[in-house]
Image 1 (cartoon, rainbow, N blue to C red):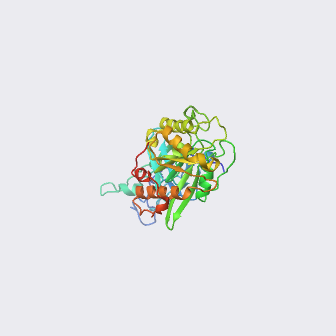
Image 2: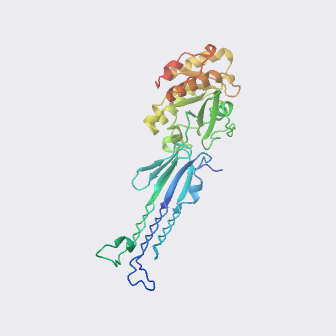
Image 3: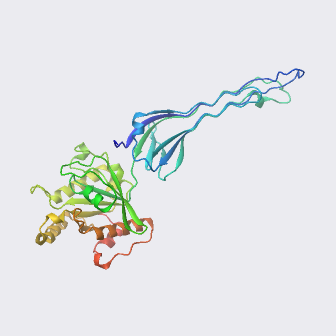
Length: 362
């Protein structure tokens, strides 16, 4: 299925039905009086967060949504029927913004959450409402009130605890496939990932977190190079960013430190708040570096990067180093949620994890 995370739709609630001006006309009842009923209310439009949806593709092609008008009132004290409501099902994490005013109308964060986005108009009054002791044959009635109309901009931001950030072919998709139930496409060419992937990482019984993998960034993304910044919005709700770096690029002329700094620069250009999130360095593909050279290469990277962030050495392919990384990540996520922390095996305890849990960022 094609992934769509932005769409613009027009929504129009139903108008209320008009009231009725009518009188009783029965044999042997000369002064029957008014009996015109009220009009029915127009249908409203609701947005519902559906956990089974993960894309806005339905709204790319169905852009106009109109609720039915309420029926007009009738004689014999009959009120008009209300118009049927419309329920628009959207993925959890969708933000609805008024396209004209820029006002945020709704934000769907909880599965099953139901929010009113367009209210139907109330029905008009029939002449039954205008009867008084001095006005026994009123002929007044009122039309129904119009329903609300809006042009809405839909924006999907996936809900994840941890986001993976890095250059194309840094191994992000391999990492998320190794630690979670996600099965993204993996290949040896740039931009294999074309849309965000979500996976649930289980650290222990009732101990898990959600990780998001987005398409890789390259230098110049702010100017539209590569896939640009169009998917970075999916990292704005995360609690922690894992900056995945290819420690052993195929091209010997490529400098991993320069690549890592370029990603940080692009992140800052996009959003200072996103740049300020806790961000850990994950040096991937250590299995492709000679064992006697690993320590020196890692030390050289850390010295030149000067980030002060926790550094983890892993191989997503061979799963080397993944266990201490996942336990440290869960500790950070649990602390930010005030959840009970997982017990870390002392063998996997690493310096620098404590300072990361405090929320300090490079």
